Length: 504
Image (cartoon, rainbow, N blue to C red; front, side, top):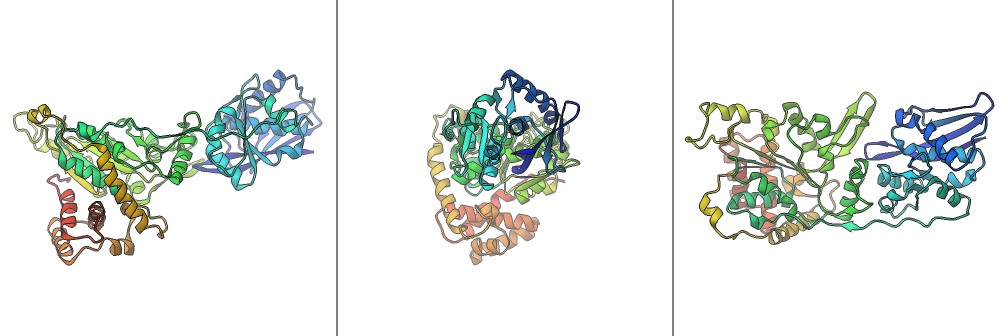
């Protein structure tokens, strides 16, 4: 007799169904696991054996073979402990085999039989719902998995309670979803004194999810402005929250089963490796670009990032997804994020101040900013030089707009875009528009078209730059509540595209 239980193996955000087969056969007592298990899965036999011994359940003096099917799919992670234990318990007759065939399970076993939380409960619950099965998981994962309302989630603290549930001795109640949280402790825009143009550019970037690059001397407020971007972004929609939380679940970032409606804000250090930014490492885990999905990726001191890391951003920016290809893994993660970057004009930072600049000026600026390649620079919709703030401005009382009023304009602009693209597949905001759709929704009036044509010819805009100007102009018109793109909208969009910064 072969007993079966079911679990999942993760390929990016996709959870693929895995059948755990257990067979007992005569021979020298042994416990083997086959089906491309990694080290953590292979060690499950010792954890399962110890957990059963802690409950005074003895294994028969037979050869135990566990097969993880499909056998050619790599199996990684400690979450295979519980389904292996369930298949084994069904094979020796402790629990009815038919009871576990209608469920999926995941969870790590402690040596005393308690269940340890694991990552990936949310995508596992989605897979269970798709296969019309219930999900059995550790109690610490139940609130997270229960967010998939179409799946019945049974959360247990110990293996003994799972056995009692399947034998009918003490049935467990379905788990309930955790709390919906929303971080409202953001830093406010009113803290920023001066820099009205930079705040206007940030509002445009937030409204249309446009990529934004700021350059300026140290202390001009670039990082301060970027840190306030979350305060003007609207909360995640329910579908966005679920999509983002599935990625965070695989990274182990969901706290106590709660799903957050606050948009992610990721700000990795410039020493971050390529695997940490785009994803990879053991198991091809999601990187910062995917953890920032539906949110913001802030790269401070942009030229200090290694050149290979920066160049890997080019494709995700364009496609909204990243493919992590390794010898033993080929996974795809969504990464539709807003890129905000900040850079000094040169290594010393005072290129524009003759009294403080180093002796290598202006060559030092060309060398320093030259680390940002032309193709990457071309992908920024808005580029702005942030001037230094005078001491007189710092002594003045705060007079800037609060984040709440700016957030209201951003919300209205995004609602207009949602209505505009509601019937378009894969389009959500102006940053996603392309091709014929972009030509239809962002076509400027004759004066605006003439201005754009002259600017493109004079400043050598690339085709990508031309289209990004149109997208930004469309967003500016949305912020103004206007149906059509006019010359003033194009002029403002061009002013953020054409700067004095040059990259050789």
